Structures are given as structure tokens and as C-alpha cells.
Image (cartoon, rainbow, N blue to C red; front, top):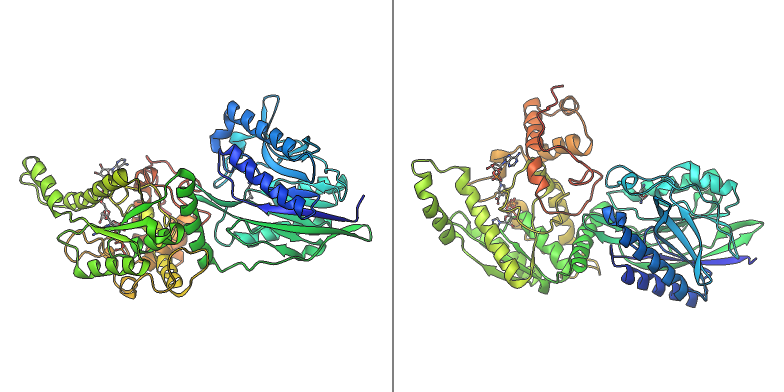
Length: 552
Ligand SMILES: Nc1ncnc2c1ncn2[C@@H]1O[C@H](COP(=O)(O)OP(=O)(O)OC[C@H]2O[C@@H]([n+]3cccc(C(=O)O)c3)[C@H](O)[C@@H]2O)[C@@H](O)[C@H]1O
Ligand SMILES: Nc1ncnc2c1ncn2[C@@H]1O[C@H](COP(=O)(O)OP(=O)(O)OP(=O)(O)O)[C@@H](O)[C@H]1O
Ligand SMILES: NC(=O)CC[C@H](N)C(=O)O
């Protein structure tokens, strides 16, 4: 028995399915821990496979490969600290989400997850079986209980482990970001510490996976709930925590406490990091986007340049006869500030050609939305042609307000592979633009300063698909629209609740209707960064065919 015990916390970014790559990262962290004199190195939940695996983890061959990668890792780490790593395991016909202890060249133990989250973005009951609550792991230092992520959000698992002798809790996590989630995590972990009177070590994963951002922010709490160490958010980090036995109980030595930025900065960084990881992990080095001179495409260009570097972003202006000089100037202003490439491809010729092709069929019919949408679809076609030719992924630029009410053209401006602002309401797009113009951080690859010209922020939003068009011709003003959407979508409020909050009933009913009838568009839309706990895709799953309306 020793009276001090060093644990290395490895807040790292795995890639789903990259078993060899994830094992190499784990081995590197283990070496860093060994070189720092640690007795244990702790990685997050399901690190060997990456997270979330979704149905990939139901494939037998994948599970066998993952377990083989863990066994190889055990052999590679035979001589030195214990390695703790998350991964799947099969027990009879049951599949478990587990935390493995690798020691002495082999798998020395395994704890299975008890509480399987099955809400919002999680479907773990579909994937895994509940395990039995596992007792603490014996070490040369403290006995360590390991509730796995959701296990630590309820009292039962930690309590059972401490009752059976755990002196420290080590919680491996795959906990994805939504705005202000850190405090929810902290409150839950403080509760476990107070209930059980033991220190708690919380190790979270970091990095983007499809829509989700795993935001790291690992930490250590001492008895009484006092913060002993806090790691940075949204970046890889390694930290060592020394546990010291004092009067029969273990105490974590005070360590560095990284600053956590405010929610605007966290949202912005989540959009940058998820786009960076989406491109990096799928193999894209470059992106392109239609740059209209409007605010949505401007902020997406800046996010992309911060994620990939301005050299890897290309803006394309596709003017029509309705495009104003101000829009041309504003689009130019964004690329000048960012220093990224810019091309212009006028659409009037191909739009006229489509009109000519359809003229015999449309003869005698008045122009309407059909012709407006052809412009948008022509832009989608021309942008996708460039994506094919140059290997650049097309970004799509619809904000959450537009995505919610279907204010976008299917197969037109909805064309594209990833949408970083999909979960950002229009009113918050303005806040984010002002924030980025005034702030710069080392993780941003684009220059500091005013990347979004003030003229873009100040002008009324317009799709410019007909003369003098403005978004508020078709939609309520964005402050009202976003207020209603926040209630209907994010808070799941009733129509009556919205009216009680002061919104006009007819406007609420119109917005409700638009949300329901645009489900088919969202079903066919690009994935995008999740920033809230009600992002479109996994948090909110509605039928496409649906005649019910709230008449309250
Ligand atoms: N449930 C359902 N399942 C499958 N398909 C369904 C459907 N309901 C309608 N549809 C189909 O969808 C079509 C209507 O959708 P869609 O073609 O998108 O056209 P639609 O939604 O009617 O018009 C596009 C709207 O987006 C606005 N907008 C805003 C900002 C930018 C842009 C831009 O393009 O740059 C556009 C534009 O002003 C207009 O209000 C219909 O032709 C119908 O066939
Ligand atoms: N003239 C254009 N040139 C290039 N792309 C365009 C043009 N017009 C529209 N697009 C593309 O279609 C998208 C949707 O247009 P929309 O008008 O909704 O957005 P925006 O112009 O960026 O912002 P805002 O809504 O504030 O005007 C744009 O973000 C852009 O990617
Ligand atoms: N992986 C998990 O069990 C995640 C669930 C957990 N409550 C979280 O989001 O932090």
C-alpha cells in the first residue's frame, strides 16, 4: 500500500471505428503517465471504439475487433501503470458498455454500465444490456469505484460501490455538449461526493462526432464537493492528479483549474471544432460555400476559416438579376477580411436556360415560387458541380429559425454536407457575429478583427429571390419567431403557453403549422452542430406525416 497515488487523466479525441488509431492515442497517454510516475492512466467511456457508435457496435465483427484491440493494448502496457479504458464486451448474448482495467499484460477486470441513457441523443437501451453493479477495483493505492457516465447521474451505483469499499470514484464519460451543460454535470457529481464522502474524478471525452461535440472539461472534486482540478473545454489535454492518504481518507492534491469561457464562446467553439473534426475524420481538407453577402453565409465562412484555415475555404458568389451591389460588396468584404479564395459564377444564363426548357410546359402559367426556387436550385447545382470537381465539401448555411419553419429550398440552398449553424437561432447568429468580430483565440485559424462587415449585421435579412424581398415578408420578425420557436421546440410548450407568454395566437398557430409541415425538409437536410438539448435530428424525432395540431 502506498500513501500517494498518481492518476493521469487523458481527455482525448477518438475517432469512431478507428480502433488502431484510438489504441495508439491510449498508448501514447499511458506512456505520458508512466513517464510522469503515474500508477494509473484513465481514458473516457468507449474510448477504444469512439463514441457514439450507434448501431456499429451491434456488429459482431466490430465487437471482436474492439476487444482484440483492448487485449493488444493490455499487452503493450504490460510493464507500468494500470490503464483504464472504455469499450464493449459480450457476456453470453448480452452486449455491455464497459470500463476495462488493463494490468500486468492482460485484462485484469471490467465494470459494466448499469444505467443506460435512453433519451435525447442516447439510445443505449437499443444497443446494450444493463450490467450488474461492479465492486471497486483494488489497486496499490485507493480502492476505486467506476460508475460509467450515466451511472453517476443517479445515487445508486456510486453508493453501492462505496458501500462495498470504494475510497475514490473514477467516472469515465462520453458526455456531449449542450449550452450550459457543465454546471449540470458538476451539480450531479457534487451530489455523489456529498452522499458518499469520497473524492470523484470525472474524465470526459473531447472532439466532434457527426452532430455532437464532446466538450471535455474533466475535473476532480474533493470531499465536501470542493473543486481540486479543472481541465480545459473542447481541446485534448492530459493532467495528473495526486491522491494522498490523510488520516485514513484520500484527498486529491490541488491542481490547475482551466478557465471555462461563456456560452457564446462555447457555442462558437463547438461549431468550429465539430466542423474541423467532421472534415478531418471524413477526409475533407477543403470546403466551399455560396457567399451571398448575407449574415448566415458570412458566419459559416468565418467558422470554416477558423476551423480549417482561410486557405482551405472558398466562397462563391452566384449573382442573379436580383443581387444588389451591396450584396456583392458585402460578400467581397468577408473574403477580403478572411483572406480566402473567392469566385463568381453568375446564374442568369443557366436560370434562363431552365426557363426556356420548361416554357412549353409552363406556358400560360404566372411566375411564382417555382421560378424563385429554380434560382436557389441552380446555385445548389453549380456549387455541387464544383464540390465534385475540386473535392471540396459544400457547406450549407440555414440557421435554426429557418430549419425549424422550412424557410429554405429543398435541393437548392439546402444542398450540402454539413451545417455548423443548424442549431443556432437567427437572433443568436447576430450575437455570435458580434462576439467573433470582437474576440480572437489561439484555436481560431482565421485572422483577428472584424471578419463580418457591420453592414452585413445591420441590414434586414433577405433571400434576394425577387425584387425587394425581405425575410419578414414571409415570417414574423426574428425576435418574435425565435421566441415562439424556443417555446414550441426547445421547451416543448403548448400553444396556450405561448399565448400566455404574450404571443399572438394566430402567429403561434402559423409557426406551429410551419414546424410540422417542414419535417420532410429536415429529414433530408445536412447534419449540423448540436448546441442545445433540442437540436433537430436525434433530440427531437417527429413523424413526417402528422395531422395533429395543438388546439389548446
Ligand atoms: N411532406 C412532404 N413530403 C415530401 N415533399 C413535400 C412534402 N410537402 C411538400 N413537399 C414538396 O416540397 C416542395 C416545396 O418545397 P420547396 O421546393 O423547398 O419550396 P417552398 O418551401 O415552397 O419554398 C422555399 C421557401 O424557402 C424560402 N427561402 C428562404 C431563404 C433562402 C432561400 C433560398 O432558396 O436561397 C429560400 C423561400 O422564400 C420560400 O419561402 C413542393 O414542390 C412539394 O412537392
Ligand atoms: N447570390 C448568392 N450567391 C451565392 N450564394 C447564395 C446567393 N444567394 C443565396 N446563396 C446561398 O443560399 C443561402 C441561403 O440564402 P439566405 O438568403 O437564406 O442566407 P444569407 O444570404 O446567408 O443570409 P440572410 O438570410 O441574412 O440574407 C446563402 O447562405 C448562400 O449560401
Ligand atoms: N454516455 C452517457 O452515459 C451520457 C449520459 C450523461 N447523462 C451525459 O450526457 O453526460
